[in-house]
Length: 153
Length: 483
Image (cartoon, rainbow over all chains, first blue to last red; front, side):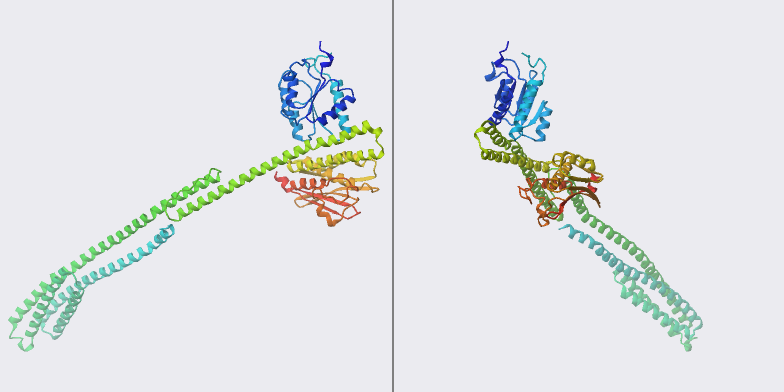
């Protein structure tokens, strides 16, 4: 049996600590931040998902959703998404791109790579908070995933 | 020697040949005439000798005075002809023959004179036997002279024939010789011209086909060598120009890439601090609202507003940058549908306001739907914005067919503008109204202008302060037919 505490619902991949803080605050307000892991770059995200490096001892459970920024140090969001979709264990993992970019090229590219959702971060605080909260609500509470991704507790 | 000089020489050659031909021919003919003349003289002499013989016979028989005179006249004529022949004679064998003839002619004359002397009427009976003897000798000398004249006659004819043949051979030789000379002169030149032109056309083809330009080699010092060196210089300049063009294209490409990276950075990185500003102000307002008074809250609201305005500015700049980079499609679009659709999408701005919107039948037009949609969006949004204090606001969309183009107009009864500044309307970040009157970054019309000009159309604005504005743009119909 997996311990309740070590389970992660949301993997937030965000290099900007301010953005991360705002997002985590919005999720916490909706009681969604209890099982949240925040990593600051693409390499750490892949380590987490594939149990490498400092995450080698992490339980096998995958998160319910990955909130992925595109502009990331070391390994950028597009590369992370490519790696996730390229590995059979993570191929079906829900990935939501949450980015400042409103460029069409990013939208087209991430959809081609099989992203589940593409959300542009609003600048206005209330809008941002609402967007992130509803994302968390949907992917953690509403959406259901196949059992091979995640054994429901 | 240059090709031009050679060509001149070859052109001159026929002239020289013609002169040589005619000179040879003229002189040959002259000589031929002399041969014929000599033959004729010989023939005349033969006739005269025969007449002399007849005259002498009759004279011996009749001893009439007239016969005597006639004989002397014939002898005179023969002497004269002999003289003419001697004057024109040049070859030694001929001179010898003529001398012999002259000697015999003198003998003949002496015999005739003897006969004449014995024929005095007083001596008629006395010297008859002697007269017969003299007459016999006269006839003998005439008879002896005749073969010589005959020989001269046939000799002259034979010479004339032989010379005529020789003349033809000479002329033919001259003709053949000059033909050979012309051929010898022209052949290397023609060969040169042919090789040069072939080399030149080959190289030109290569260069024209986009191949690497290589040097053209034509040795020598004539015009073709000059042409080759000019050609090579031209190739070199072409290669230099091509290099410069490629370098510039590369630079331009890099600049465009830089610009794209820049706008991507703007899009992504400039928003993050703004979000932080607005976000943390938001947190402050939420978490510390109780410890703030009204002024404190107002100040936070100002910061928050400015962050949001900055975001709109970023969005507008990015939209303009995208407008410049967009590759246009050409699709057949129903303009009326498009305008109605855009108008409906602006309903947040005009709903609840007294607005009278009229859109005629605009017809179909080939254009890029995204770009032209943005054009209508910006023009209609402006019309809605600047009629905000009108009751009712009137916004009309119309179309006008021009030769080779179609003009669309959006007319409103809003705030209008001072026509003196109409040239600034379409400039980037240029605004004719204060920020507290009408919001906006001054990018909308710049985008309109950029999109319309990318379609090879142009934009125009008419208006007056307080009397509304009319913005129009044209789209070409001819270029659309080409694509």
